[in-house]
Image 1 (cartoon, one colour):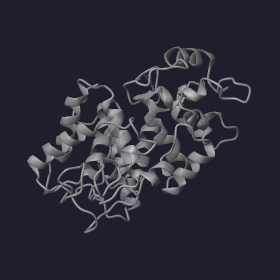
Image 2 (cartoon, helix red, strand yellow; image 1 turned 180 degrees about the vertical axis):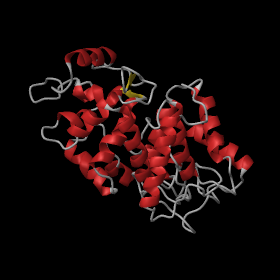
Image 3 (cartoon, one colour; image 1 turned 180 degrees about the horizontal axis):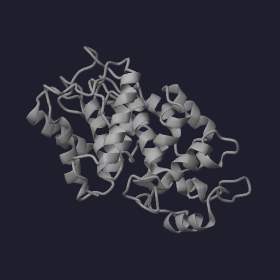
Image 4 (tube, helix red, strand yellow; image 1 turned 90 degrees about the horizontal axis):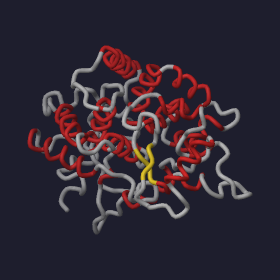
Amino acid sequence: MARSSTPSSLTVATLFAATLLFLLHPSNAQLTAGFYAKTCPDVSSIVQNVIHEALQSDPRITASLLRLHFHDCFVKGCDGSILLDNSPTIKSEKDAAPSFQTVRGFRVVDKIKEAIERACPKTVSCADILALSANASVYLSGGPYWTVLLGRRDGLTANPALANISIPSPFDSYANLVSKFAAVGLDITDLVTLSGAHTFGRAHCKSFSPRLYNFTANGGPDPTLSPWYLTALRKLCPPNFNSRVLAENDPTTPNLFDNHYYSNLQKNDGLFQSDQELYSTAGAATISIVNSFSADQNAFFESFTRSIINMGNISPLTGSNGEIRFNCRKVNGI
C-alpha cells in the first residue's frame, strides 16, 4: 500500500505525542530527531523512496525491515550488528536460531545504504538506517508515523550466542516473553504493543507447526487454537510441510499495519504460540491491553510510536563509540 510522504492529521497528532514524550523523558543516549539536519537532511526521504520501490514487487519487505530493527536492538542494543556477514573475525547473528533463514531484507538495506552514500558519504550509520526503515515500513503499510531519534553508530562485533537467548521466540511462554522484554528495559505494554508488529508479514511453517501436531501430552494440538484456524494451518502445513511455505501472520489484512492482530488473539487466531500467550494465559496482565488495542486502533498506533522509540533507544552506541560503516555487511577496514 503506497503512502504519501506527508503524514495525515492522525499521524501528525501521533508524531506530536511521540515528540512530547521524548521532551519529557530525554534519551540518555543523546539521540536526537535532527541529528542529520545539516549533514544529510534528505535521509528520511531517501529511505522511504527505496522502500516504496521495493514494495512494488515484494509486499513482505516492510514487515521484514521492521523485524530487522527488532532483532538488531534485542542483541547488544541498536548497533546494526544483525547486518554483519560472517568474516574471519565475525560470527554473524544471521546464523543464530531466531534469525537463520528467516530474517530478510538485507539487499534493500544495501540499496538504501548505497543511495545514502551517494547523497551523504560516510555520514549515516547502518543502525540508524534500520530505525528509519522501520518507520517508513510501518507508515507505507498504513500505520503511524513517528519522530525517529537518530545518532546511533555501528557496532564492531556480532553476538549470535546472545541472539539465541535474548530474541523472543515464537514458542516462548508468557513468563519468558515478559522476562526477555524486561531484560532490555521494556515493560508489558511494550511487549503487547511491539508484538502487534505481527499484524503484517509472513512466517514459515516451522515457526508455528509444533502447535498443530502433538502439542499436548496426549498428542493433540494447542488447545488455544480456534478449530477453523487449526484446520486452515494444517492444510497449509501438513506434517511433511514444504519448508518454503509461508503463512500470513494476519489472515484478515496481511499487508496492512492495523489492529487486527489483537482481534485475532481474542478469537484464538494468533499464529504464534507467543502471540496467543498474551491473551490466553490466565490472569495475564497483558489481556486488558490486548482488549484495549482491539477496540481502539488509534490507541494501538499511539502506543506503538512510544514503544518503538523505547526499543530504538536500547543501548545505542553514540559519540566516538563504534563507527559509521561504509558497507552495512562488514566493519570498516575488512
